[in-house]
Amino acid sequence: AAGVIQSPRHLIKEKRETATLKCYPIPRHDTVYWYQQGPGQDPQFLISFYEKMQSDKGSIPDRFSAQQFSDYHSELNMSSLELGDSALYFCASRLAGHTGELFFGEGSRLTVL
Amino acid sequence: AQSVTQPDIHITVSEGASLELRCNYSYGATPYLFWYVQSPGQGLQLLLKYFSGDTLVQGIKGFEAEFKRSQSSFNLRKPSVHWSDAAEYFCAVGVGQAGTALIFGKGTTLSVSS
Image (cartoon, rainbow over all chains, first blue to last red; front, side, top):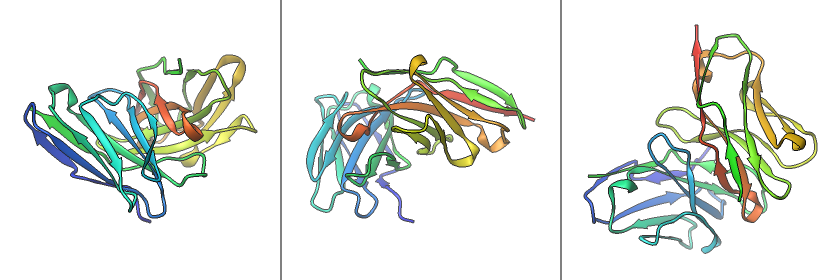
């Protein structure tokens, strides 16, 4: 079965650079979530989208922005990167109206040097 | 504010022994509760979830959890642990629309000894 696809799986950037992470949800899933998991930390909810509109907002820094496109894929844009942005970024998707399970991707590991 | 507490950072259990991972939550309304498992370098896999109804929920891989409103707890159990169960376990409460903006606990690392 198709799963949530994230790209790139690994990314290395310098401080103050920008990075873009992509998420392709499971086919027919219309809701996308972004989470950030720092080393040894629990995942922190950043933001979510439903039908290309922001639905919930968590602890997403102002330097970050995200959007969902007409094909339901989502991109997380991170600017002015800081060392503390080094983390595993998870995307999850679900089908709206189906309360319950989020399907998580395997994550994109960002390392900021 | 909503929060999830997992009191045990690390637990070691002998293979074949029973397991209980503790989870306490703080949430004003009836919570949506979840247990996820994460193997090293991998994504999060849902073990089980509770929304309403029967307070004892069954999940995958032989796991179950019991919701106790009076104790604000949602402890995860397994009667007999297998070596492949070694992983990080996260309890989460769902907030936001449809309760799917998850707030995770800090996680419990399970080690299985032979």
